[in-house]
Amino acid sequence: MTEILVSDVNLNSVCDRLEQHCFLDQNQQNLSGQPQTPVLTSHNNTGAKLWGRVRSKLLRQKLDPQTVQSKNWHMDIIEMNGIKVEFSMKFTSRDLSLKRTPSKKQSGVFGVKINVVTKRERSKVPYIVRQCIEEVEKRGIDEVGIYRISGVATDIQALKTAFDTNTKDILVMLSDMDINAIAGTLKLYFRELPEPLLTDRLYPAFMEGIALSDPAAKENCMMHLLRSLPEPNLMTFLTLLEHLKRVAEKEPINKMSLHNLGTVFGPTLLRPSESESTKGQHITSASDIWSHDVMAQVQVLLYYLQHSPISFAELKRNTLYFSTDV
Image (cartoon, rainbow, N blue to C red):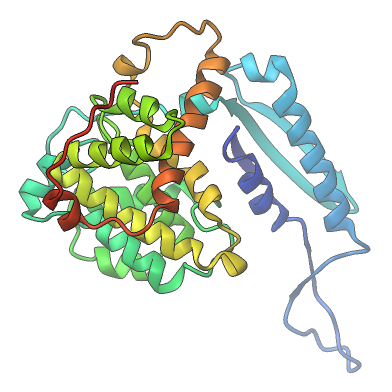
């Protein structure tokens, strides 16, 4: 049985994983009649046809207003040529799936303010960020859809627990874990920060800065905003930025362009905490609020991804300050 949580941002990755299960195990025999090792093989395109039915079913459910409004799991079975796929599905909106969930605890790393973690670790960039990036660059940078394909939820939760409890075997776990789970753990860390990496305080200025039409004014504003970030936030952002640029260099192999990475990480790094996200909103529709904000969030990150290398030392040496008023 396959259990699926369908959201706007992970439907395709759900479909990719489900597709892998649409094959038939078959024991073949050689001429002597002795059984050979079982192999995976398709049966008259059954897997592809069954997969087509599953995809169609998932998309219809996703677009069905009753499904969108329902908070219950929907059970279904699709069968063809002896292959049966049984799955349960529940829709969750992007707005809910990206909601920040700050922690009330000060131990661990997930849901804890980034300056608390770096001070405790006596580091400039949180250990979890450095280790996940290192592992992705070691064996995941050529992975098709890296950071887009969802990892297995149980693996991500296991890594989360290991980092929170400072498990001694964390490096062994990382080396053995599926790379998509490691990428998912990194995204989850940023998503569960009590406030976005680029901070609630500067969020309105980022939204205004990215909307500037004059290139020189935009450059001055966007660089000033980086200088205004707390040092742990800035160091972590620059570290992640250079990593994502290196991932995009492998786009012919991994299919992850700067725009794709900006789409994945923009809301994660900029989406304000719940208390801040409702301030100053004059748009009544929740979907309009999402669409309005997410495009700007993606554009902010994309601006920095497309920028020439940004040096922390150079930012700090530059003492000129520019107004962010528009």
